[in-house]
Length: 393
Image: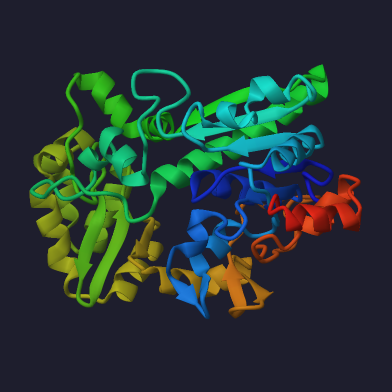
């Protein structure tokens, strides 16, 4: 039995932040019912890349869920959505603030008949505050949170992280909050409303930058791949590519100096202690690369290993996911799929010694489980057919 077996989640979210959250809950065995609009479904069903007409993007974000289509402009469909909420332990939505209330699917309305309900609202800037009504996309939040300002080379422009980091981070915080609220409910018997904002989530993840801001009062500047405080912690050029190394202490630095054949560097006043190394970082990097550029990436990483200095190659995603380590860890699971033949999926990465992650399952086809879910609510086949004819489902 998986960790969240027996927990039902009504997923009203779409695109990425909410679906990422609910996919994590499905990974842990929750029964996630994804409510979609008949005909079109979640917008992200129409986002590329595609394979045989199906969205790979949507597939990875909606693994392990069931799909029901309800036309929320129809009174009967709205009533069915509220019945689903009454049967749910958790509701997740990422509408702009106020939309759920207009649909009659907000926390205040739903808790009247389901006081044990855990209700998660995900939005760009939260349910309150001067920016609450602003539409938010990942790039906008990366820009406004300060993350872009510290990402990139010092001489370049602020740069976005190469993934929808605000959406992913918010989805993870949302999943954490839901599980925490379910634990609290097990003690009190009461549900709660959770407000998670993309902006808040990205600010909260910048621990090193926040520490630098508190220490100096000045906004942190971009430093490229190097660590803003500890030196040498950076990427370095080898003969055939880039690798990274981390020498976080004087002892590590002494071993590094010996490894590159320049033990005197450890006694050089310019590099005596981290603060001095930080002041002379450019000179130190030049000295290290005199050695590293004479060797391949593999040779540099191997030499660091012998010297007990943490190091690793700079890989692309294909190299990472096809590495012997990823394979040994079972990081990707192959799932049979009607459009793709099979697809490799990465589930939430926590490993449990007992119950935990459920077996990987593909995403639902649009409305695939509508009749099944409505039967679970007690509707007859005749009633379901009537709803179809009225275009309520």
